[in-house]
Length: 114
Image (tube, rainbow, N blue to C red; front, side):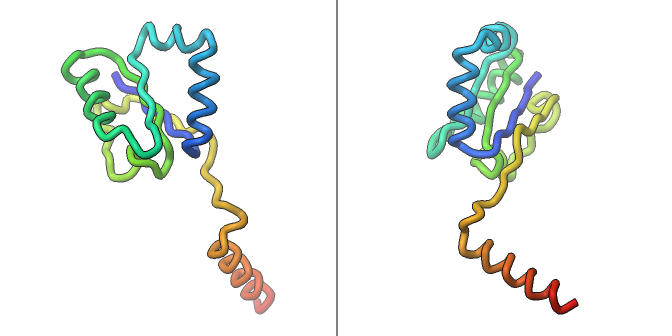
């Protein structure tokens, strides 16, 4: 069966994978499931390899992906592809984003009018 784990950003995923592979947990998990992870700007065939591992090879697989990344938008991890879905961390918006600052300013002004 497949397990999908979403993390909040590519940089967090890279840090996590570095720690995970260096830990003893990786070998424990890898002995039970094939481990895949999404890479920024790549991985066009990652989903097909993950799907093939589960549906054709009939092995377990674990895939680490990024919320709002390529694998999280419009893909249905149904049936055996996503028997367990985890979300690690929350994707907070960039506090210095000009559009976010303008929205917050607008909401502050509106709340004072009430």
